[in-house]
Amino acid sequence: MDRSIKAQMYLRMLEIRGFETKALELFKQDRIRGSMHLYMGEEAVAVGACIDLRRSDYITSTHRGHGHCVAKGGDLKRMMAELLGRETGFCRGKGGSMHIADMESGILGANGIVGGGIPLAVGAALGLKRQGRDDLVVCFFGDGAINQGSFHEAANLASVWKLPVIFLCENNLYGLSTSVRDATANPNLADRALGYGMPGVTVDGNDVLAVHEAVGEAVRRARAGGGPTLIVAQTYRWEGHFTGDPNLYRTKDEIEEWKKKCPIAAFRGRLLADGFTEAELKEIEDEVTRALDEAVNFGLGSPEPGFEVALEDVYA
Image (cartoon, rainbow, N blue to C red; front, side, top):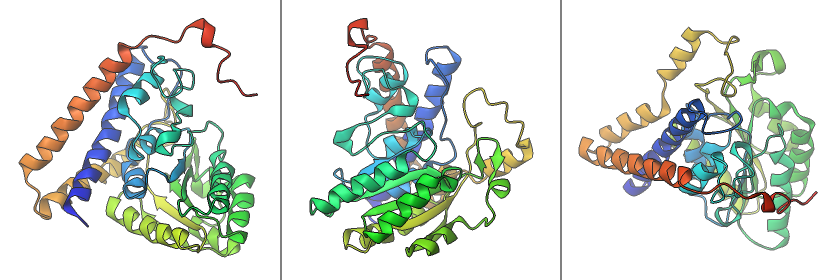
């Protein structure tokens, strides 16, 4: 892999972690209204999946979607403004944390409905195929969503029509407070792919290079007309299901054990082993710090939407 791509991966992972940290601080200051679903600990999945995507490729996201948006190139300033409910946000402050969308970056939208983005991704992939384009859709969803009927219907149709969509299941072991062990008869979620005639791959979701390799193979298959792939990335969210979640269904020891597997720390160590210097990594880290400070200042300094726009952008 090109050295510059590895540096970009590190930068994007830091942006996601830093964005979430800033957002949590603002939430605790009562600057952000409503709860959020934080992505800390899962950064390697979004970055490994999106780093090589074209701007003209699409993603569909979830209620835990900040990381996906950052990884696909969403502007940090407009994202922060959206969380803060400001006019300069991607959805003019009216979408908030769970509904960020940016068509220009190929972000078809985060989604508050569990599994809601899956049929949207298949519809977009059908549109791409009918237009004769070789672009594709990466569909992010969680282990809870893989048990929804929407997944089964969409996966079957995508395979029948050989649509250019990658189903990327982020298995963070819990659907809200329910362990995947208690919700799924077969814990090997990638086996679901067999029923739909597509490849099923399980990957270490805390290893950004492993995710990149698995998604890269699926991307080549999709662009060549080979149809969909199911990838299950094994990972773990550090925070509760949402801000305010008391986390009573997990032990502190379990959380701490997973924090020792931090995807950013692991990748930083690998970069040093690959010849990056501390000074080079520090430069990237400082760049991210400046960008996040600018994003917060931009958001806080932006106006709130006026009452006159309340009924604009309403389609149903």
